[in-house]
Image 1 (cartoon, rainbow, N blue to C red):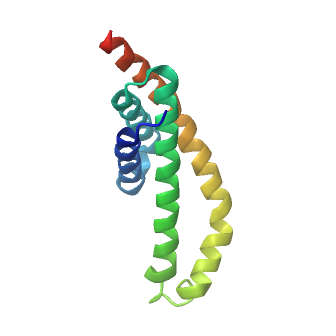
Image 2 (cartoon, rainbow, N blue to C red):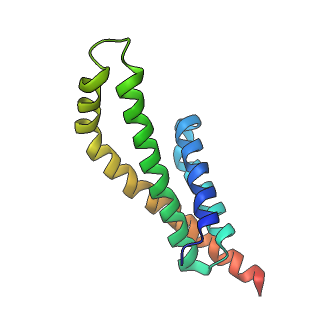
Length: 124
């Protein structure tokens, strides 16, 4: 079962990691996944599920922010602004978004499962 509080916190942290700590993305996602699984308190599979959902939401939001930036932020640059920028970012970014979606879900899911398992042992 999805614990939306844990998913929301995890997805906000995943967006922060992607936006500000891109060089340390793997380690940041490991930590965020663990935190999400621990907050969920749902055991191994619950932590895995909640962290994977948070990672998927984080990827989707980052992709939307990138498309908005490419569409409107590049308007002053010329070629990469407006409809052209939207088309270029949409076509070239589709495979990147799908691979990031899988990557975030797997990395955060693994450590989320560990966090959820530790949190369920704390309750007993």
